[in-house]
Image 1 (cartoon, rainbow, N blue to C red):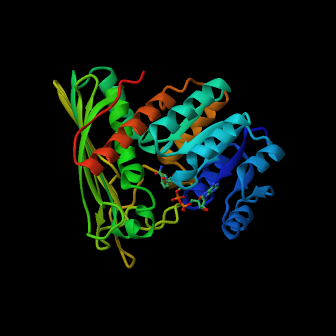
Image 2: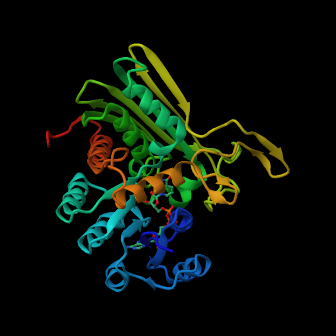
Length: 346
Ligand SMILES: NC(=O)c1ccc[n+]([C@@H]2O[C@H](COP(=O)([O-])OP(=O)(O)OC[C@H]3O[C@@H](n4cnc5c(N)ncnc54)[C@H](O)[C@@H]3O)[C@@H](O)[C@H]2O)c1
């Protein structure tokens, strides 16, 4: 096989799925990295990868991959991205790009200095409805863009198992901050946010944020990790080993029209012995034995960018940096209870 060579850093739930999808898209997985040696061995066996390591740098010395895919815990993204870029690899990094604006811009600048590309895994940009909505806004279908409303709720059980390992702004709101940027196509200049959650929780399970963009567009971004276990599952039995539900909506409001989307498709309803499900068919559905949907499109796009076959037009790294700036401001507004003006940067 002749496809680009790929090392996956972080082979938990999503890293394992990435290993599958990059291979299905024609890449060669030449190494895996994870400090959890039991997990590393398990994924190496099921994905048939020989080279493994508990740290990225020594593995890069050995295998020199074209691409490093980062699907590790959020706090590890910056260090892994800088290591990969400095070793000469292109980088695909799961959201969030970084946990501070300073780190995000450092990654972008390091990529430019080494003439490498960085694609951030903001998967929602790659769903078919979002692609169509963005094209509609760009050709003026809704006239002058005025406002965006984005909402994303997750299973309560996820919050208790992994949702609070970073602030939920970085875990869930970052998706919608990024979508808002993909429509407004400029920086956020001001945010104000409020939070709520069970007393004693380390992080808030409910966040509401209001963003104002440089061009006057406003966006509401809301996230609650409160979907009860009784709600129909949307991911159960899918290729990601995570049962539960993602529920949400996006609305784009312009002077001449409005576009609305449900975040996960509810076109299929299943009432079976397993209970009630509305399986998502947009993010990573299995189609004829391979993973399709937004994840496959995203990986195909990243491969085209990394091999010089297309410009990084769908997910420019600069826009991911704007998202990290806005998310950092939301976290600050939640901390202080006051509006935050973003510094004029570039
Ligand atoms: N785009 C999406 O829809 C989506 C969905 C799920 C997860 N994610 C993102 O994927 C990433 C991983 O999430 P997950 O749910 O798979 O988490 P996970 O906890 O299942 O896996 C994370 C793995 O990273 C490993 N790790 C930690 N530090 C590391 C390091 N320095 N080097 C290499 N590996 C390291 C951990 O040992 C673990 O195995 C996160 O950034 C998350 O936000 C995105």
